[in-house]
Length: 100
Picture 1 (cartoon, rainbow, N blue to C red):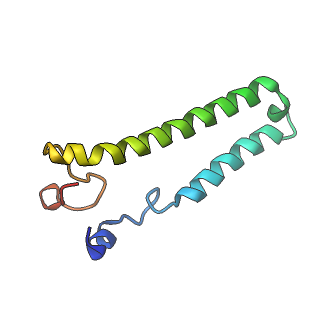
Picture 2: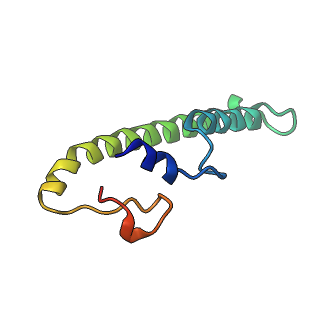
């Protein structure tokens, strides 16, 4: 894709301007803070909470990796069969968007 076209199509308002590392670190921070807050039970000391947290994180990471690999591996076969779409997340008119 053309670099200028890419820059012009990017949205710079919330939540599109939040980087992935910031989003990831803030979600981990919120979970840790919820676990160590001084009132109630300390969640990070409970075995069932830690097991649930590790399971959820593991499934999420595995789903991301599988999806990422599936997108890359299915891109060429779908394009060869003339099955493709338009990037709906970019600003602008749908008719003028490039096929992806």
